[in-house]
Image (cartoon, rainbow, N blue to C red; front, side, top):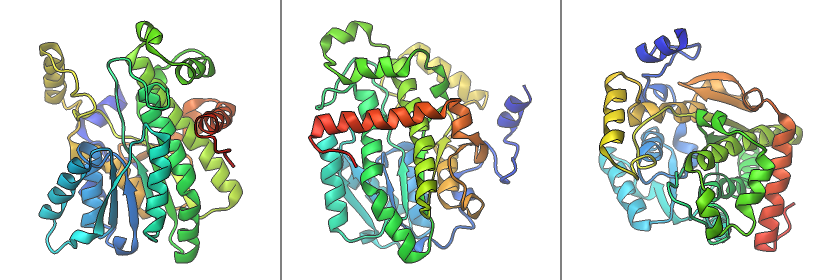
Length: 341
């Protein structure tokens, strides 16, 4: 009850910020981002676009990867129009379909060809598939987009981030956007993984549970953070990874299915301050990506711009993270024909 009251009134936590803080507010001290290059997935609308806009406002060079280039160019135009004296060329739009492993590999090759540094990687893109769907690789679409694509993207960009941190002395930061819905998943995660990643066809549509699929993808994001944090520590890399829960906000992610009942629920939630605005929901990602208080913080779970313990404590099982990493590498290797180092 106390935590709910703190959330509703927006009480500041140890960081000095709370649930009512906005992305602009938490980055007011981050005026040093002119030398920073950030990739923000899912930046064509909603939380991702606001994250990209605020980072750009603080001086960062932004890369917006998107399936739909027109939507990405429109987002770029909106961001530039809101920022005075901002160099249009400091936002780069590139093609990326996270549900396609080939698209991820092509994006990384094209990004590396630009010879840009990479300081920040914000894995923000998310998808909630109400209906059964599969990726071009035959993987359940929610898992393919929310987790597997981001897993491969991060893995392929990691050396670039490590090299950038070494050459500039600026710590690299990876932010994985998850959700507290990860706790809703129940059952054997590897049995479920085998079901959605092997011969996943229309016969599975009768058993498809959209909420379970989404919660599993968010749990996978959390486990990814746990294992990557361990690996970065072992490598002694000057790069950190943390995950964030942005809060509940009405974005394109949950706007796919409309209806009176859903509209009524969102209306009541907004009136009771249970829903965040987009600037408030982007705050935690921006805080973790830029604030000096998060320097050297690794493998932690953040909500309302405050640390809520380790990602490992939120999953309660570190060995699951290691097993999921290995399973992910095997899936990618089998689908692409490229052995994963």
